[in-house]
Image (cartoon, rainbow, N blue to C red; front, top):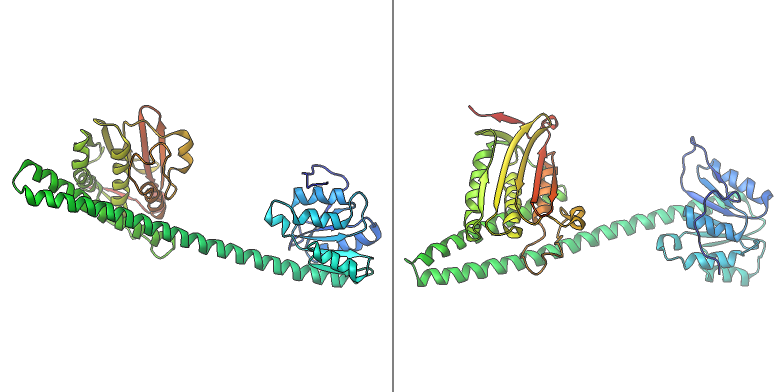
Length: 397
């Protein structure tokens, strides 16, 4: 049985096109009679279609597999492989987009049995010879228009299903995180009530403070991401001292870092630096990066947060001394819900943190990258070009 192999430099198949013509679609004509093929090809070409041609069934299979036309005009009585078999093979193609290509059968066989057979094999229309070329052109236009509408509808449906699935995943994720944090808050509150003046009380207060801030950051993170992604929100820029904000975020994460004997360090080259960015977005970016370092890094490591300015713009960096990121994870590190298989089940997380970093950086005209240093840690960079009009730096007095 024949299949649809790729075709390279096949002289038995030619493409009729013109750079001045507007290609409304790619139409394959499968016809072994040049006196029928040529005027039909020319008429379709004049209508703005890119025309592919094949003079036998095997060549047609090659063209379909390699070129993936938008519509096929298929003669039945062909050498090597007849039109019935070509149509049958087409509808069995593993690529659903190829298998669904509209087929108009053009044939001298005009019995009802032949027509029914063509329709049973999946032909979309059946035009007996001799035919008016105008009729073939009109049928081609109608089927291609219908095909385009169907594909657009399928694309919209996929988009709706994707958005619905993302929303469902997000709700499950939020409820899971909310439940976990509420259990932590409840447990430490009970301990605090039973030991109001002990050393344990301070540990409880620190844990409650950390969980509360985590929930606040998570809520802000999810709200901003959703609004930015669906186009409901444009981040407004405001002037603020980024050095003070970095200090605040390091204080916020001092308790969980202390539990693991980690040291949080700010290495900002310029003190009292005012930037024009979105304060909440920068807070979420810093929170996500610092939290990521604490969760995945080794005990007793140093986490360095740096802000500096150079000729290319301004840059925020967060360095850790962890094991680095597996190379296979690097292309996916900023994708929503991505969790490395190395840490799944061992480290709790939503898979939204680094995605939030990327989305919010882009929304402010910047971009996020990561440099991997296996065995020595990783360095996350968030860069904002000053030439974009966003992220302009003003040095305080």
